[in-house]
Length: 88
Image 1 (cartoon, rainbow, N blue to C red):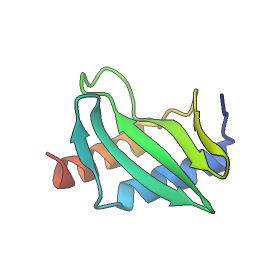
Image 2 (image 1 turned 180 degrees about the vertical axis):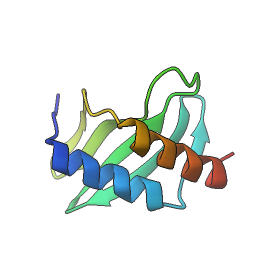
Image 3 (image 1 turned 135 degrees about the vertical axis):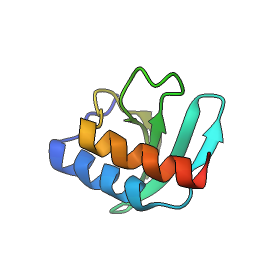
Image 4 (image 1 turned 60 degrees about the vertical axis):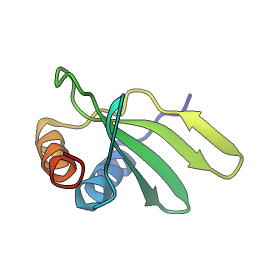
């Protein structure tokens, strides 16, 4: 299980908040964004009870779960606005 530092998580959330590639899935709205040479998945819980989170890392060697990388209130609002624009 991968943990991210605060600066990396903030950069990933910023990339997700600017991405037009949001998808609506049965797990909620989701986007895959790049940061450095790696890719990360950001998901918004469909129930609205939880803030957005980075759920997975994809890079050299495979894919790994990410835990504990939750958006702040302001980051979450920006992510929801972008997701609702591109994957209502």
